[in-house]
Image 1 (tube, rainbow, N blue to C red):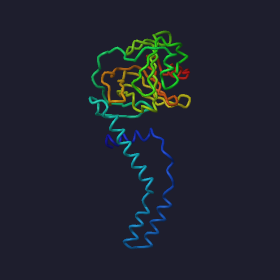
Image 2 (cartoon, rainbow, N blue to C red):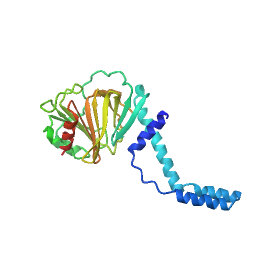
Image 3 (cartoon, rainbow, N blue to C red):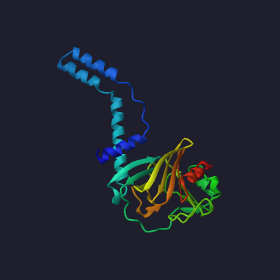
Length: 266
């Protein structure tokens, strides 16, 4: 199986397809009818009857082109790590790639979280209602980025009991939220074989838990494919869809604590 075939196969698992209609009976009847009425003109008409309806052919073609474009765009996002993709899947707003090795570690940079504000002001400026994990208490700092449609919210929590300090952020918890329906591939994650990646359902919502060796995290801004300045290592992360939102929780806590925090989002 080629790399492209592996990508399309994995993407297919992530898409919701309508049930396949029963076609065998109709095709068999058309073949038998064509065999009973030989002739070049009739043969051409029979072959046309065997084809799917024009609308269905067009839909299938559009779907295939869409998959090819998506696969090409995702795997060309980071120029230095285009090869050796072992696994690919994503959520609304994020893509995750597993690779046999990560690129060179980026230098540590201060977090670029946007403009500092308050929850009250954030509610007025964002295109969605902010969700706050009540199990973590009130955030120590609130930030908003307005570069993306609907805005991006970040909640920062200092380390405390139940929220140990993460080496990647120096915080106990970092929560990010944005409209995943408007930006299907805004967040990118690249994980190595030593990083555990698990698909979950949390109260019916799709989620992905990433744990173990730090993984690479980056943004794809609306006006470009890749923001190298945003490339950094991240620790344990839970990504979860909540309606139109994608919520990202990062910290040094474990899976069960991450799920507890997610279920307390209000």
